[in-house]
Length: 500
Ligand code: GLU
Image 1 (cartoon, protein in one colour):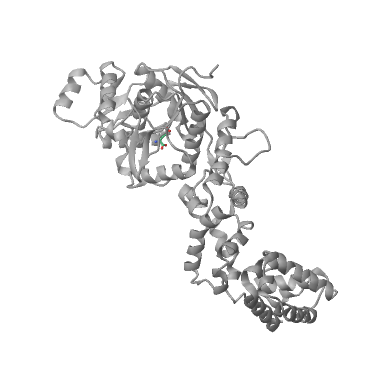
Image 2 (image 1 turned 45 degrees about the vertical axis):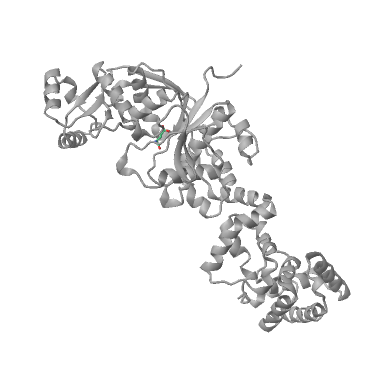
């Protein structure tokens, strides 16, 4: 038995006003997951009714981010060769191309006595607001134009007075709806303002556009951020006034900073693009975002998109705010990076590496040219973001390692001994063939050297590691020697001795 009798249709309805907020990506993801797990349709609608806030290129950018994240719409606005296009039978899917529809339904509500023309000027509304604030009353419209006589209305329309259309909120009605996340919600209509539904420029407000579009586009489930919860009773009233069945709502919990304030640009990035630019993998970011509000009920944390489609459920979406913990994201991203196929890692890391080279004025040393991919792979197991790849192998790019010579001395040893061992090593390594500079061969040679000289592993491996990388936490010296080759390895050892 299907859970829902109608074909499930969910939509992502971005306003093209700037970057893609991580909260928007979460809404899109949950909408997508819910549609897919119910064999439904996920579509995209562009909500561009606030033209003053529109940013050129924002819609294309949002769609591009979704595509990178693997969330493709079945219907609605999409990208064709980088340009906005649309597909499906419920269009146009861009609100600014649907103005006649909003006007038609606004007028229908006026005719039915469920909405009214309001001619109040900005100045009057401003005064009203100030008076209410001074009297510590909630700021709201005072119904002034509700009682205008029809002749008066006609006269003002005829003389071309500017007007908006407001919904007439019924008095003292309990409005009830069932939210998929929050359960039953009850609000008295006393708390609802006579909201503007059509603005003076003929554009609808969000409220009317939402009701008209989600009805005509047959949206069954409206999944959106908690900030829309206070508006939902108005929406229910609008659906009712228009004689339509409202969709089922799910309001997703707020996303919070670690100090539990609302996620804000001031404390970190909120744009998905910024995370991608820092080298978070789209799959990791999506996985991380899936857990902002949803909890699988098990210990499992790593999910592919297909697994999310199977396992996601609104029954496990919680009401409490979800903390955006960058440390956890870093961990998760590191796990995804480690698991990338080598070739894919190199491909993905390359642009970040190139940027690092330019930013730091590095050129690629000769010994690296032949071993370029191997060098990048040294970083793969150790970084949590692709942008760290350059820093992760900086020691391969410069001769000047600039470490404190004291680092060369293993804790059970002293400087004189370190120097002696480095000298012995140089002698030994000078006799190696070029073919000994592979990870395995070099490791075997070293083991042999250690046994022959009756030394402890740490006596040799510690100063060697520091001499080759300048760091005590770094890839194993055999891996580094393989990339450096004989000449650069020896030169770094000589440098180390000079330092001691
Ligand atoms: N355009 C609205 C926004 O970007 C959509 C809200 C909704 O999903 O209903 O927040």
